[in-house]
Length: 150
Image (cartoon, rainbow, N blue to C red; front, side):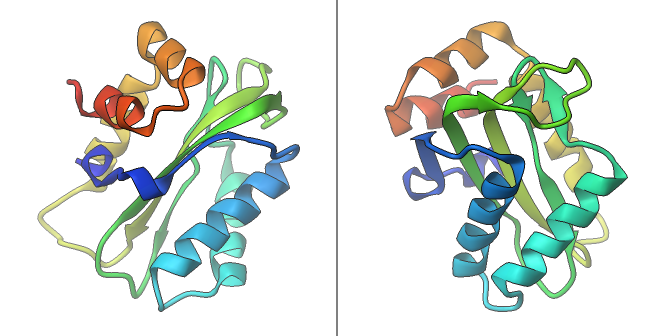
């Protein structure tokens, strides 16, 4: 599961990001530092294109920006909580303050679908008690444990 890839160094708590653009820029910078096949600008353009197709906000203050990229061998994930909620074009019109972002190999294992993993993460991010834990803590191990509990 993608959530199992979440590590302490992939978690950013109570970040002072004030726009969707700043968030996507931070995500792009982080992922570009983890892979060597795509630049920050490339990743940002993929994320912006994905957001134009439809917002990756799930509602209840949560978003899950994700994109499939060619030429990457394995997925990468990150978690961000925000100091202040921001508008993210959510279907419920509520601002967001929690994000789980993922880069997924476009040409990955043909026998494996990351879609199921994304659904699993969205299920976790729709549980009110888990959302509260993620919002209230800056303890990265608690965040990891919250995603690992199934």
